[in-house]
Length: 472
Image (cartoon, rainbow, N blue to C red; front, top):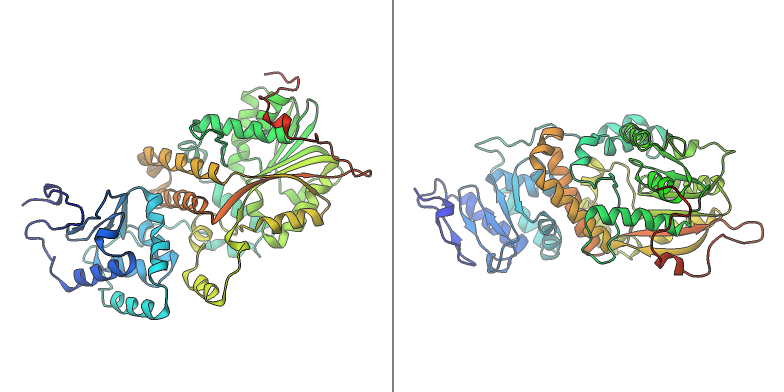
């Protein structure tokens, strides 16, 4: 009997294998109506739909990906309850498959939200969905191993020190072997810097590290504090190329062990120290010339934001500089009406990341971040949004992860591989459409005379990398 691959592809054509086993059942017709209500007629879509019996609906033009619906009940679970989390978990646990460009597939939620723009349409759609069977002929992996963050509740209130430590470890302690599959050679887990756009990931991350060092105007002999130092790339770069003494703090045991080993291998133990420490536990009597914080503020939370900046200000010498690099919410700064608020609660945007990836993470508007910094003694001296750079970074990461799929599944399992593939693709989409941004804020701590040690112009930032007398 011919298979699906034996049938030639004609744009817009609905194709069926010969004598498919259940193609005319009522569930298939319902499923087709539901998919059309959500995403439009086949010819208008940018993707292919494959149903459980082999029927395929092609778009009019080139297909970016294929949405493979495994069973009628799989579609029901994907849409009940109607929320972002239902969509996501259908993919995570094998009810649906996404073959091809997963970043394009992420936009399906936005397409559906625009097409189902009224309570009446939603109710009509849900009637159709509820007529689909609720159980499968063949079981999916919906009861498979779930690595979720619900257990954090037993560690107290969000952003308490005990719970923050567990949240950070949930996110970062998947294992250095997993992260090394798709990060660059220095293990930099933050936005790269692509001034031309065609740099390699390794070059973009080295460029980002140097950009931070130059913005801080690091000089040989200074003492740098890196809050949330990750695997140690920034402080190692700063010590090697700028001659500073650097202290990095992290809550991740996996990261700390990796960073300490790398510091020792590179012969920098006399200049670089890695501490397993919460930022709130920094010694009150220790002062630093410069401070960096890259990808840390997302863990802080609005309730603790003033504490975060107060601690950083207290740890910085007068006249010093603090570079804060973090993701910000653009949507969160925009006005929303009551309908938006209700739909937001129903749709539960962000529930996927909070449950599976980044528990207790909060993305705040840049005005909220800068306002807190200023309340706690800082002065904004410069700011740069690297949103487009993060889109490119994330696309590199997704591509590298997909190319190491078999190894990733062996290390972390099928569900966690899917979590990270989807999470990074969804993040690329959110940056690309301007829902979130990534801002480097250079903050100064004026001395008693109101001075901050910073040049009058940005001219020095446009020069090539300098070593300030450091040993290379």
